[in-house]
Length: 254
Image 1 (cartoon, one colour):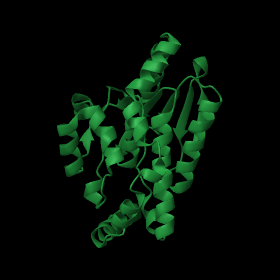
Image 2: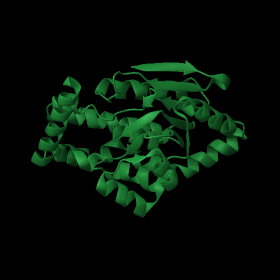
Image 3: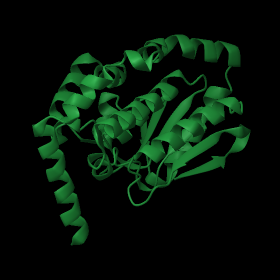
Image 4: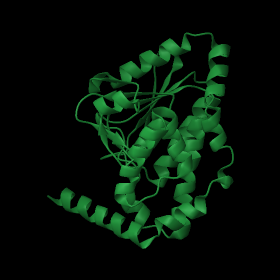
């Protein structure tokens, strides 16, 4: 599910490797959180989170999630928020190497990193949850607001907009774009430049700058998880998600 690659200066790349679309099922979420925790424990100086050429992650594995009962859905979303918390509280810098399309949960992972490099071209990124009947919780809305600003975040979230890489760069959703084959290289270069700064000053300033994000995930039990699970089982949400799965199945059979 993951490829762990060690680069110069002991930087660790965590590459999503769950074909065909790197959909985030429970096991992948758990593996990602463990990989981040292990990297911190191993004293890795920084992490690059990457995907496959043309596709970073398709987000939540909706077909698998729809098969779970209420307790199973709660377990899934708690693990998703736990992963967000691990990214938010990580004491080392993280770069998202967005190697292609990155809807919904894939975009969320990128937002919790320090810096985002995205493939140039017709690749799209966005929190399109509303389009598939899901609510975007406050703890995730916060991550987008702090990157693009309050008003722009509102417009993107309410519309469930998916925007191409050039527009994502223009509004600050991503920090730079480059050719798809250069995304990871550029992510590593940015991280190298950051890690060349005086370590104590850089890491302390980083911790202070990201305190709002870390504090939002200081206590997972304080997040309105039960309300979010209840919303997942709303009839409109279930109908919209079932229709999405049917479209995906029809497309794959062609």
